[in-house]
Length: 387
Image (cartoon, rainbow, N blue to C red; front, side, top):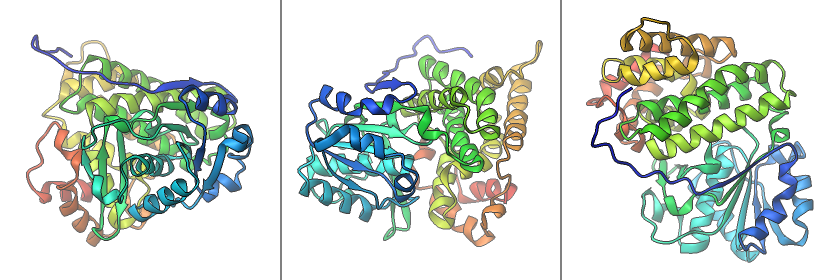
């Protein structure tokens, strides 16, 4: 990879990251470090039932003013609005999210509404905010989204029939706490799906138009860690060392794509998720190699970096040969971890992909794709390859 001599960029990663087994027990101390006195905990019913919030709520003591646990798999505008009302009534000055990407994205929306008021529909877009939002501590229980360090949130709007994308530097979580114990109970399929979300973030951060050396470095090491440790996590979920390395990889990939952006994989995954309710990470994993093939002629040097990170670039390969090896490596990797290979396995139909193809052209993620997508027919061809 070579960079132009006139290269210029801004790198912004303000989140304090705390890593370690049982590090989530320090949440009250960390809350105090950012001036928090009254916290609302945002989570979901599955996390509650698994007992993953018990020690955190205990650690917060009387500083916890309430627990909002009605967050679904794909959170919505109405959920964020209801959670904000709940937090406001409790007088919360800090939001603590415990869960996966949907929970963390809900909390991001709540942070905006506690500061700015109104409904989340008032804030859909890119860099609309002019001041820091309510402090947020994110404690992920999956290893995939990287939301604990990103400026992005994706929220379903049922009235629009589309997912809203919010990108706000003023709303990045202040603290991310990575505790491998919280991911140890993830079943194999969820481990694989969330892991492929992180892998997609890393690959797309490398091919996205605004990529730069720092994000390339973060993304490449995330791929190295995922390729080595995600299969271990799928096969042996209680291996906390492997779980921790995958958590770190997800955070690094999150930092990378938060700066560099993503591309057509996410645009297509968001859209098929909105139409057919395919879990986001699984949609990414199914679509990744096909989207790389679509982009191949435009950015072989980027995918050559992916090949290097996977360890499949052999001596003497030019960039195009290495890029093709990277695509093959992604395909084989998804099979190795038992990841679904086709959208039809997720009950997606031809009608679904036709609707999603039109929807994807309006998705903000597609803007930074290295190859310009000119028509929905191009997207539909990608969908059909993996249907």
